[in-house]
Image 1: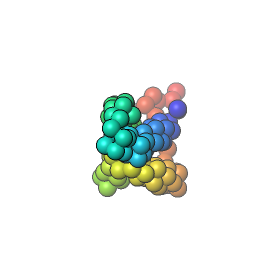
Image 2: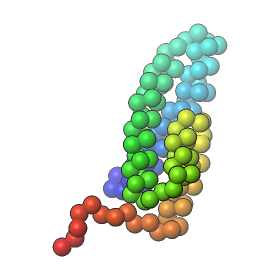
Image 3: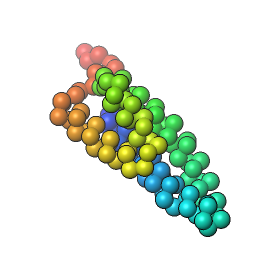
Amino acid sequence: MKTPLDRYRLMAYIVGTGLVILVFVGVPLKYWGHSPGVAKVVGTAHGFLYIVYLVTCLELALRYRLGIPRMLALVCAGFVPFLSFVVERNTTAHLRATEHDPPTLATEV
């Protein structure tokens, strides 16, 4: 994971998949199946990973100088099922189309 975009993409897929499992498997099992185990484990993992996802979104926004509307879309994508996949694809296409090259932290000699 060399670039902020790579890290963001990985976290978007992980958080998106966890949220889909939580909403469509864990919650129905909890309320209809009276088995809260999946919702408890996946919910806790999703909560922790969402914080990591937010950090990667912040890094992406700062490195590529993303605007407020795109940053809000990135943040909302972590708690709306399937939205993380759509926003990730859109953001990746946008950054690749504009050929963003993040500024390096170290100066080259």
